Image (cartoon, rainbow, N blue to C red; front, side):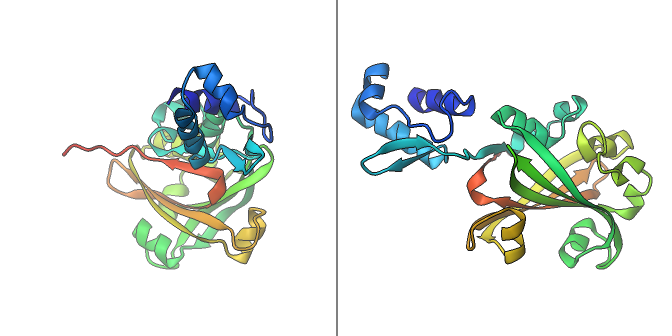
Length: 245
């Protein structure tokens, strides 16, 4: 829909700034030469994507923290890695926000049971963990822990550095012969724990997206599992799913 697309573009480019009032229904009807019903459908679409909020009798306003549109079919493209951009940074750049990362821990841990199962290693086996907290415009939005099999990680010294280099850990894995074939994600929505509420600066009882991703190599081995919690109101998850055989 042209109206929704135009306004969404203005919001992401900050032509319409956070907290600013969106043009009224009458103004939009005049500007686009459309009916009131068409304008209302566009506003409904913008509310559904989390870009605006409407206050009865006062009009619609740009949300102070528009959600990041997380396009899983795009964010892990090899072209991003070759350009030296890790997925989160490439995504933030497309959204027009300023991204930053704080590394909380890099080192060996005992694999939790679910992670061990995904990596096909014994529960409690030594794995490399990389724990990071991600920010958008200075606001914490997600926390992620990557787990890598020790026999894979030990031969890639960059994985033990806070900054693994351009393109992130997937670029380093591929440089060392672990060409990625497929990324599979499991998505759950639940209430944040007290610890997660503190980490992401959420209100008590806030929902989070709990996303766990397997990165499988061409050799058929899962070479990384990423366990991520995300502030549910900060993201829209987009997936492209083939409909053929």
